[in-house]
Length: 170
Image 1 (cartoon, one colour):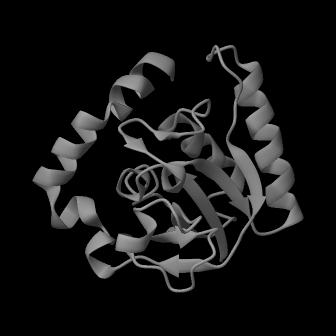
Image 2: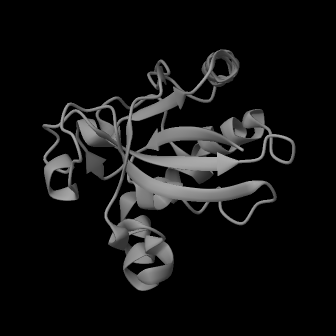
Image 3: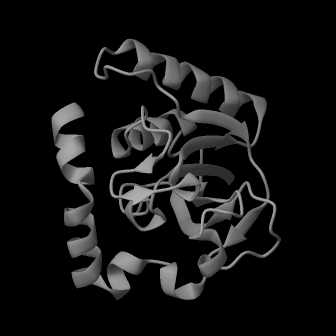
């Protein structure tokens, strides 16, 4: 098993594209990249901790290669927005691909270059490719939020503008 970590704005919306696929063993919502140890959601949502909201994915590369994870990641985000994602604004909602090894780094860079060269976007692709920092698991109520609170999740996602953007650009 290997791990992948992606920041794509609100972590609730970054779980569903990856779940229930062959080779995906688990998806955990959490925080990474900041200066506060063991951060809470209340701290991270202020945007002052330096943490991103992220998902950490455990997968079997023989069944689901890292390149396929990247193919699923990019169409979930606006890679030209460095101020957050959709209705979620602030540093905690920036986008990034965090890599665990050189193979992931090279694959992430190549995939970002492909997105940038695709002509889909007017502005430059600003999603960063960064070494994987320490991961902190988010509070339990954030795990599988879409299953625990389907009505609120659906309303929040609809209001965010994410799906409209995806339909228009991907």
